[in-house]
Image 1 (cartoon, rainbow, N blue to C red):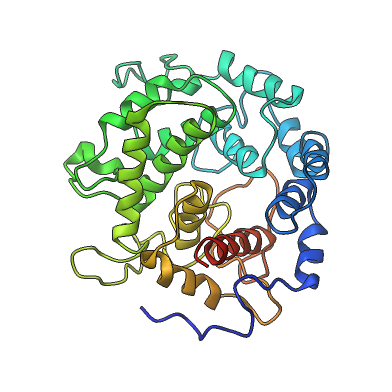
Image 2 (cartoon, rainbow, N blue to C red):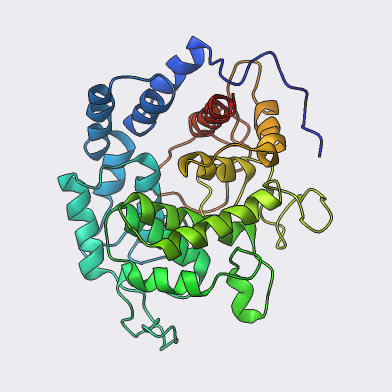
Length: 337
């Protein structure tokens, strides 16, 4: 697949001051990551900015929306992007400090009160009125369980049931697929990235299990063998997933369960993977999307009700996408030099 336009005048590590100023003129949840990943600010300054997430801006707004029952939108999960799972996903992406009093209180309410209605521990469906698994025990679909476990591991919760299920559900090609229970033997990029992020958060939180690392690296190879967006069998670029709802080469935030090339690269960066030639075409794709102003646009805004507004509209420059793109390019350029 050819990139959408030739490599532009910017080098991979060249970030104009105007772009950094634009990124820093934002919410604490973005500012602290820019300071850490793009400006090499002193640790104490980064920490001081990160602390603000719990009391100012988007993070504080999300925390204030939690119900007395510990849930958001009154449910563990929904299609609207404002459920308990989705808010914890956002708080993790924002970098809310798991050790903060605010995080410990909010997550404790989730742990003690929120349940998956209908789902029993053995994975059987007992009906909508059945008070099922505690939130961090998860349900049955690996894409949902992956997102739950990523938040749970990040916030230092016991997600052992989910972990055991995910390890047992890995397919022979190295990835995962929510349709495996319906007979699918081929993995899904969408499901695989959700599980990979969960396993990585488990390891980063101190989980020391060789089986987890081995499983994650097999899943990582699933992405790399496909150059992050190609079919292994033919080398053909994958334009969109089988349902047609996700375009791998268009960048979104929040991504939720959807895969895209930038999300895959940012996972590899976060995992400390060593850049290799199989990533080069994906990196070129990211670079090709940088505008002449040094910013990246939000290309996809998945339909659903967000709990708060944290991004511009489709087609407008996005601080979230720009942050992720710049740190991926810097990681690749630095580690591949």
